[in-house]
Image (cartoon, each protein chain N blue to C red):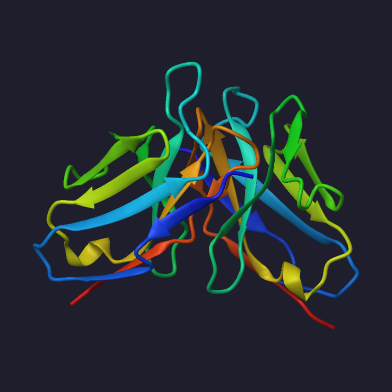
Length: 118
Length: 112
């Protein structure tokens, strides 16, 4: 059973870069068929898709965040990562990693809260 | 972007009674491949969202049969035939026909 776990700093200063990693266990990130995704949820709000990456490195980003987002994959570590630059308080949210297959985000990590504050 | 609109915003249901949530999309979710890319998720308190229904009406693995999805084009419905205490949380619809993926605003279901 594939499991996902987010990790990274819970506090980031304004204008800095938010960096998170998602570790995939119970399966290989290189097995194909899955897009490895980041989704966020502002406090008390709905869900916002950030982007995803295929194990080959192909990426797709939400245009609303595209200029600030980089998603990368490290197949040797079975991990994928999110970098969001020039953060502001509006980037304070719970960040989830998830696997995407055939249209659905079917497996989610537990989420990690990131607060942007000085 | 495709806008997903859910109603109602919240629902208070007596255990054992049915519940229904509506989701409308600003564009048709019917793809030329014949599939309709509409999904339902439940986010229980303190947990990540979990997939309930894929492609309008297919229950994901392990989802009880009291959950059912229906609809076509731009109008969709999630029904719970008999609400149980474990069904509380926020329900979201989502579309995957076009990037960016977009979610509805959510419907909060609570037990009376």
